[in-house]
Image (cartoon, rainbow, N blue to C red; front, side):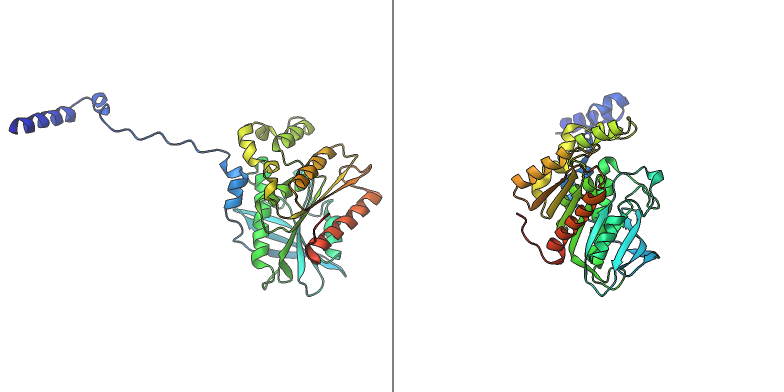
Length: 330
């Protein structure tokens, strides 16, 4: 026994005085760290499980007041950023259904809060809807922030939806808002952001997609890179296909619960009308509530009689699904 003890002691002494290289051969090694998924936080699954809201809407100034509604400059927090926009608040006691209206792409240095989509927000306010029109991140005076694949902009919308749900009908700026009747309206880029939002949120009852970008992000950003002469879309085009499968809303249309109304001009030379046609077909195949309305001869942003017809159609759609209760589409 004594001999075994002395032998063990000799081994320990040898290890204690061994060269560092020799000692390292007997030390346990920590396993290498697992590589984090650089695109994990952009996936529809991740966006569907994270939390939103937690802030409040602040009114800053009256921008306009008329017989039908008051227009305010407002702001709210979104993942550490401050997002601004305008709110059209109908005159009267409410409660008013809420529509979040999303603008399309404009060069940020040319953007103004009352942009080309103001006329649609005003038409909806005159029809009795409380309209929130945020300047999406990067559009002054909103803060800028991470926005790969425009997921950051969708997060801004999801945070706003959560705030409406929490504050609607409560004392404050949204006292006359109906938090149980929320709609989305989006043109072009805003339409693409709306589609992502619809695959994540269960709080939107109805959405109008107007000449919307595709739910296929590879298709979107290859087109954006072409339109911009290679200035934009570089990082997005570099995202691997295997990541885009879990990021692109087109692969998650089965999760949409809102009624959807899709509008596109047949003469659109920017966003191909076939993108809307294909989206309609996919939603119909999934037996979703969807209507698909083409506008013969209309460009990317409608004009004249086509624009007036679109305003009538979008208002009637929201009246059916928000103001007067949900009815099944044919």
